[in-house]
Image (cartoon, rainbow, N blue to C red):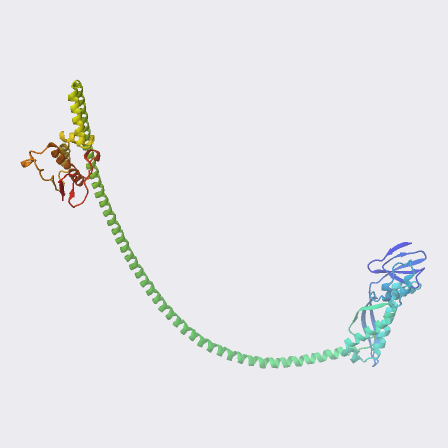
Length: 477
């Protein structure tokens, strides 16, 4: 037992044990007592030069070429058969309508006679020759010429009907031009007749063509001349129109250029004037800003000068006041030292010391405390007079305000002219002069004396203000 496989263009034909007729397959197990034969299914060309006679007894040669091979698509029921050749089930599915089975049986018959290819060629050519002669003998030469396609279909149909019994198929059929048989000149005469007719017709056609050509040439020449004249006239008209349009366009262009040049000049003049106006505005703004800056500078300079002058005067007055204060303090300390020295000298004189202490105590109480006593002593020492002189020298050259003070009427019982008054009233009047004096100094110089030394300034204003004295008033202008 062996496994056989066919080539792509081959089939296997298996006969023998368990196979009723022939089993056709591509691959199968071949059992003992079975025979396997390979056969090709490639189509072959069969070229023939058939000699036939028409219905009018006209002989001719008919060159044909047929491509014929096994019909691999007409398998019948064998296409469903079981491929296992070892079982007997496939025998009941075999069908004699299988084209490959018919072809294989045809080749099997050839093996006992001649080679398969020669045997097949003899059968195919015999069928083609027989069917073609039968068909030609039933047709006239005119029918064969005029119905070439029908003639070809009928040959194809008749030959295919005969080939079906062998499982063969016509894949292509080509019928060439008919030729004369040996000793016949039919097609030659027809060809010559056709040639002469064609030649004569060609001469006639040439003459007609020449006639039509000459006439047509003359007609064309006339039409050409007319068309040329018409075209020239239209060209001249169009040229005139184009010249007119060109002149109008040039005039319009010149006008546009003039208008554009005018607009450009006007725009340039307007721009120049606008620039000049803007320049003048900018110059004016610069001058205004420069004047404002100069004014501010002058104002600042005056303010600085006034400030410097005022500060200088203030500093001078402060320095002078400090000097006076220092001198007063030194005098006070000197007085204290002197008092202490006297007190030391008079320690032994207890009564004198006690009396002086009581006197100072009473004097301090009379002036409201040590500060009042200090002011009294400064009056006694002429400190305020010196300070007034210093202030007068500081405000010299200025326009001072004039102040008039009235210390009040003479107290009753003081005597005529006030000479008989007590010393305390006189001191009070003198002390009442200090606040107006400080106010005058402040108004004239801007200097404020220390309040702890000279007291507080009186209320400011242009109205008459009363002092702390009994009748004392002062007037400021």
